[in-house]
Length: 208
Ligand code: 5GP
Image (cartoon, rainbow, N blue to C red):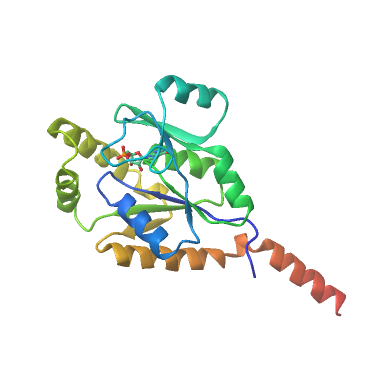
């Protein structure tokens, strides 16, 4: 029973919840998944590479791509634009590959609206305090930026009910295993196997 089209898996949740770490762990241990590389107008952080972590664009280049309908979704987050390039994701899904989008909440909601089959995960650490500690511990942002991200996290948390699954990130390996279990279950959803069901029904008729 093979799904023809890949699953569109949206991994979102407040900044500092560990979305990036969980996605990296999933990809390392389950390389059959592909992560969509986003475009952004944010400047690269030390160690980030163009085309690997993000496609780093100027605001003009980004806006041009919006006009060309080049994004599945895009959003402004803390003063920068972020977007999921359309062509690559569509090609992978059509090849039957499961694609992960690691994106913030506004983008996740757009995907939910446009892709009825998308599976939305909301990554959370066990406590709010841990969220703050993770934001502070990253050491790459100023105090002001951390405050902005905490306010953003508050808003993002208020969106939890729009997601299908909570992905508790107490330990990254455990979060990965939960993700894999959910994906396996999703693949057996009746809605994702209509072709199998229709063929089975037809075959039953034929052998009567
Ligand atoms: P950062 O600047 O820390 O890399 O990312 C900031 C936020 O933007 C994170 O929550 C990240 O998940 C989100 N993000 C990354 N790429 C995209 C994208 O293509 N679309 C949207 N909507 N958010 C994204």
